[in-house]
Image (tube, rainbow, N blue to C red; front, side, top):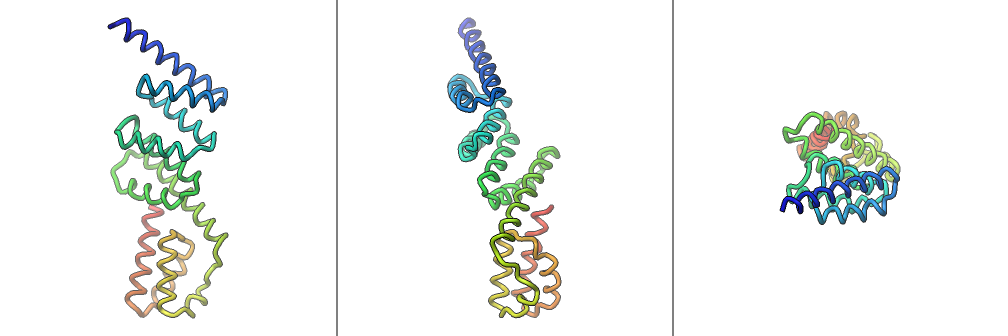
Length: 202
Protein backbone atom coordinates (compact mmCIF):
# COMPACT_ATOMS: atom_id res chain seq x y z
CA UNK A 1 0.00 0.00 0.00
CA UNK A 2 2.82 2.39 0.93
CA UNK A 3 4.47 1.71 -2.43
CA UNK A 4 1.26 2.63 -4.25
CA UNK A 5 0.96 5.88 -2.31
CA UNK A 6 4.61 6.74 -3.04
CA UNK A 7 4.16 5.95 -6.73
CA UNK A 8 0.98 8.04 -6.85
CA UNK A 9 2.74 10.98 -5.20
CA UNK A 10 5.54 10.76 -7.74
CA UNK A 11 3.01 10.86 -10.59
CA UNK A 12 1.36 13.94 -9.07
CA UNK A 13 4.68 15.75 -8.71
CA UNK A 14 5.64 14.87 -12.29
CA UNK A 15 2.34 16.23 -13.58
CA UNK A 16 2.85 19.43 -11.59
CA UNK A 17 6.36 19.85 -13.02
CA UNK A 18 5.00 19.26 -16.54
CA UNK A 19 2.21 21.78 -15.96
CA UNK A 20 4.70 24.41 -14.83
CA UNK A 21 6.93 23.73 -17.85
CA UNK A 22 4.04 24.01 -20.32
CA UNK A 23 2.76 27.14 -18.57
CA UNK A 24 6.16 28.85 -18.60
CA UNK A 25 6.60 27.97 -22.28
CA UNK A 26 3.18 29.43 -23.13
CA UNK A 27 2.12 26.05 -24.54
CA UNK A 28 -1.58 26.36 -23.75
CA UNK A 29 -2.69 23.25 -25.65
CA UNK A 30 -0.30 20.87 -23.85
CA UNK A 31 -0.95 22.57 -20.51
CA UNK A 32 -4.71 21.98 -20.80
CA UNK A 33 -4.27 18.36 -21.92
CA UNK A 34 -1.90 17.69 -19.03
CA UNK A 35 -4.22 19.42 -16.56
CA UNK A 36 -7.12 17.17 -17.57
CA UNK A 37 -5.00 14.07 -16.90
CA UNK A 38 -3.79 15.57 -13.64
CA UNK A 39 -7.41 16.13 -12.56
CA UNK A 40 -8.06 12.38 -12.91
CA UNK A 41 -5.35 11.64 -10.33
CA UNK A 42 -5.67 14.37 -7.76
CA UNK A 43 -7.49 17.43 -6.51
CA UNK A 44 -5.59 20.32 -8.17
CA UNK A 45 -3.33 22.45 -5.99
CA UNK A 46 -4.05 26.17 -5.70
CA UNK A 47 -0.98 26.94 -7.82
CA UNK A 48 -2.12 24.53 -10.55
CA UNK A 49 -5.56 26.14 -10.62
CA UNK A 50 -4.06 29.63 -10.84
CA UNK A 51 -1.97 28.48 -13.81
CA UNK A 52 -5.11 26.95 -15.34
CA UNK A 53 -7.00 30.22 -14.98
CA UNK A 54 -4.15 32.28 -16.40
CA UNK A 55 -3.87 29.85 -19.30
CA UNK A 56 -7.59 30.00 -20.09
CA UNK A 57 -7.51 33.80 -19.99
CA UNK A 58 -4.41 33.87 -22.19
CA UNK A 59 -6.02 31.42 -24.63
CA UNK A 60 -9.16 33.60 -24.70
CA UNK A 61 -11.38 30.82 -23.34
CA UNK A 62 -13.15 32.69 -20.51
CA UNK A 63 -16.35 30.68 -20.85
CA UNK A 64 -14.51 27.50 -19.85
CA UNK A 65 -12.97 29.34 -16.91
CA UNK A 66 -16.40 30.44 -15.67
CA UNK A 67 -17.78 26.90 -15.97
CA UNK A 68 -14.82 25.37 -14.12
CA UNK A 69 -14.76 27.95 -11.33
CA UNK A 70 -18.51 27.68 -10.73
CA UNK A 71 -18.26 23.88 -10.54
CA UNK A 72 -15.37 24.08 -8.06
CA UNK A 73 -17.21 26.61 -5.88
CA UNK A 74 -20.42 24.57 -5.95
CA UNK A 75 -18.46 21.50 -4.84
CA UNK A 76 -16.64 23.46 -2.14
CA UNK A 77 -13.28 22.51 -3.69
CA UNK A 78 -10.13 24.62 -3.84
CA UNK A 79 -9.73 28.24 -2.76
CA UNK A 80 -13.01 30.20 -3.00
CA UNK A 81 -11.31 33.60 -3.29
CA UNK A 82 -9.13 32.45 -6.19
CA UNK A 83 -12.10 30.96 -8.03
CA UNK A 84 -14.20 34.09 -7.55
CA UNK A 85 -11.55 36.61 -8.57
CA UNK A 86 -10.71 34.74 -11.77
CA UNK A 87 -14.38 34.11 -12.55
CA UNK A 88 -15.14 37.84 -12.31
CA UNK A 89 -12.14 38.59 -14.53
CA UNK A 90 -13.41 36.05 -17.09
CA UNK A 91 -16.93 37.52 -17.01
CA UNK A 92 -15.40 40.94 -17.59
CA UNK A 93 -13.36 39.61 -20.52
CA UNK A 94 -16.61 38.27 -21.98
CA UNK A 95 -18.19 41.71 -21.67
CA UNK A 96 -20.65 40.57 -19.00
CA UNK A 97 -20.10 43.71 -16.92
CA UNK A 98 -23.54 43.72 -15.33
CA UNK A 99 -22.94 40.20 -13.97
CA UNK A 100 -19.62 41.38 -12.52
CA UNK A 101 -21.42 44.25 -10.79
CA UNK A 102 -24.13 41.92 -9.48
CA UNK A 103 -21.72 39.27 -8.12
CA UNK A 104 -19.35 41.84 -6.63
CA UNK A 105 -22.20 43.78 -5.05
CA UNK A 106 -23.31 40.68 -3.12
CA UNK A 107 -19.74 39.88 -2.09
CA UNK A 108 -19.10 43.37 -0.74
CA UNK A 109 -22.09 43.00 1.58
CA UNK A 110 -20.27 40.09 3.27
CA UNK A 111 -17.47 40.32 5.89
CA UNK A 112 -14.75 39.19 3.46
CA UNK A 113 -10.96 39.53 4.03
CA UNK A 114 -9.47 42.93 3.17
CA UNK A 115 -7.18 41.67 0.41
CA UNK A 116 -10.11 39.88 -1.25
CA UNK A 117 -12.23 43.02 -0.88
CA UNK A 118 -9.57 45.11 -2.64
CA UNK A 119 -9.47 42.65 -5.56
CA UNK A 120 -13.26 42.67 -5.86
CA UNK A 121 -13.44 46.48 -5.72
CA UNK A 122 -10.84 46.73 -8.47
CA UNK A 123 -12.73 44.32 -10.74
CA UNK A 124 -16.00 46.10 -9.94
CA UNK A 125 -14.58 49.52 -10.79
CA UNK A 126 -13.18 48.21 -14.07
CA UNK A 127 -16.55 46.70 -15.02
CA UNK A 128 -18.31 49.94 -14.09
CA UNK A 129 -15.92 51.96 -16.24
CA UNK A 130 -16.31 49.60 -19.19
CA UNK A 131 -20.09 49.61 -18.94
CA UNK A 132 -20.19 53.38 -18.67
CA UNK A 133 -17.94 53.66 -21.72
CA UNK A 134 -20.19 51.33 -23.72
CA UNK A 135 -23.26 53.34 -22.80
CA UNK A 136 -21.60 56.64 -23.62
CA UNK A 137 -20.53 55.30 -27.01
CA UNK A 138 -23.86 53.72 -27.95
CA UNK A 139 -26.49 56.08 -26.60
CA UNK A 140 -27.05 59.84 -27.02
CA UNK A 141 -26.51 61.97 -23.93
CA UNK A 142 -29.74 63.35 -22.49
CA UNK A 143 -29.34 66.92 -21.28
CA UNK A 144 -31.08 68.45 -18.28
CA UNK A 145 -33.12 70.57 -20.71
CA UNK A 146 -34.21 67.45 -22.60
CA UNK A 147 -35.22 65.78 -19.34
CA UNK A 148 -37.30 68.80 -18.29
CA UNK A 149 -39.26 68.54 -21.55
CA UNK A 150 -40.17 64.89 -20.91
CA UNK A 151 -43.60 64.07 -19.53
CA UNK A 152 -43.79 62.17 -16.21
CA UNK A 153 -43.88 58.75 -17.85
CA UNK A 154 -40.82 59.52 -19.99
CA UNK A 155 -38.93 60.85 -16.97
CA UNK A 156 -39.72 57.74 -14.94
CA UNK A 157 -38.73 55.48 -17.83
CA UNK A 158 -35.43 57.33 -18.26
CA UNK A 159 -34.49 57.18 -14.56
CA UNK A 160 -35.38 53.48 -14.38
CA UNK A 161 -33.28 52.80 -17.48
CA UNK A 162 -30.13 54.47 -16.16
CA UNK A 163 -30.60 52.73 -12.80
CA UNK A 164 -30.83 49.28 -14.40
CA UNK A 165 -27.83 49.97 -16.68
CA UNK A 166 -25.69 51.28 -13.79
CA UNK A 167 -25.02 54.49 -15.73
CA UNK A 168 -23.62 56.73 -13.01
CA UNK A 169 -22.79 59.59 -15.38
CA UNK A 170 -26.14 61.25 -14.58
CA UNK A 171 -25.59 61.52 -10.82
CA UNK A 172 -25.16 65.32 -10.64
CA UNK A 173 -28.00 65.71 -13.11
CA UNK A 174 -30.39 63.60 -11.00
CA UNK A 175 -29.47 65.29 -7.72
CA UNK A 176 -30.25 68.68 -9.28
CA UNK A 177 -33.52 67.44 -10.79
CA UNK A 178 -34.60 65.79 -7.52
CA UNK A 179 -35.13 69.15 -5.82
CA UNK A 180 -37.52 70.22 -8.58
CA UNK A 181 -39.40 66.94 -8.91
CA UNK A 182 -43.00 67.38 -7.77
CA UNK A 183 -44.25 63.81 -8.04
CA UNK A 184 -43.50 61.26 -5.32
CA UNK A 185 -43.05 58.39 -7.76
CA UNK A 186 -40.39 60.35 -9.65
CA UNK A 187 -38.56 61.25 -6.45
CA UNK A 188 -38.66 57.58 -5.40
CA UNK A 189 -37.15 56.50 -8.74
CA UNK A 190 -34.41 59.10 -8.34
CA UNK A 191 -33.62 57.92 -4.81
CA UNK A 192 -33.32 54.33 -6.07
CA UNK A 193 -30.87 55.54 -8.72
CA UNK A 194 -28.78 57.30 -6.07
CA UNK A 195 -28.86 54.21 -3.84
CA UNK A 196 -27.64 52.03 -6.73
CA UNK A 197 -24.79 54.49 -7.27
CA UNK A 198 -23.77 54.34 -3.60
CA UNK A 199 -23.70 50.52 -3.69
CA UNK A 200 -21.63 50.58 -6.87
CA UNK A 201 -18.84 52.83 -5.64
CA UNK A 202 -18.84 51.68 -2.01
